Image (cartoon, rainbow, N blue to C red; front, side, top):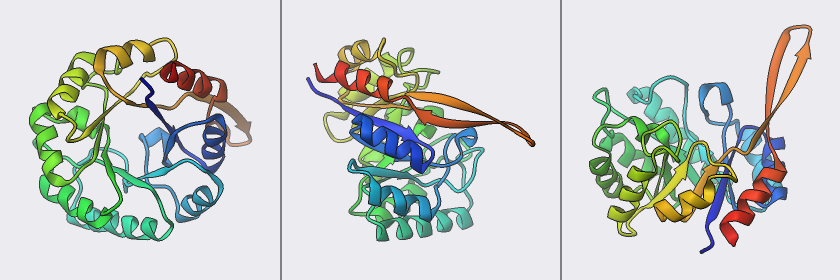
Length: 234
């Protein structure tokens, strides 16, 4: 059974590398150290003009928690509107309330702003209470896909919940496994969870030293991407 591989990228250079390596889709972000933020309009425009695979854009105005103020929700809606002008293929966001439940009202607002472009609810889902109920809420909100590690550190550890969610979704929403995906475990996850979409960074970190100290530049490893695709295409 063939499956789809999405690669998280944090720069235009990373997007080009992942695309050339054969990624089926990229999740375009900025702010690696923050866990992913909305990239600049310039980056989005460049990537859309220079890659062939679909581009899903992270919509997240800041790091920290996933409980956003009305002002932040308006900013997210504005970012979605601008992204649509550049032909992005999907949006990625996640919103919780202060009780660690899905914020259905805000999620519905953003799904309506994104329509007809599909929405992925990111790993904020892994912090929500009552995940099965959370999945049902997201279906009602109009979300097309949930990225999850099964509420564990890695998808391998959380594979039981991922499999259960996938089973109970009954095709109404896509369950995409992510976190710690590598060539050594993706076949087991494919078999045990029944997922047909997987999310990975396939990362290699390039160290940068300069007069200001130490920095990191995150780029995907083409060899790992090709190996992952080979594993899920056999």
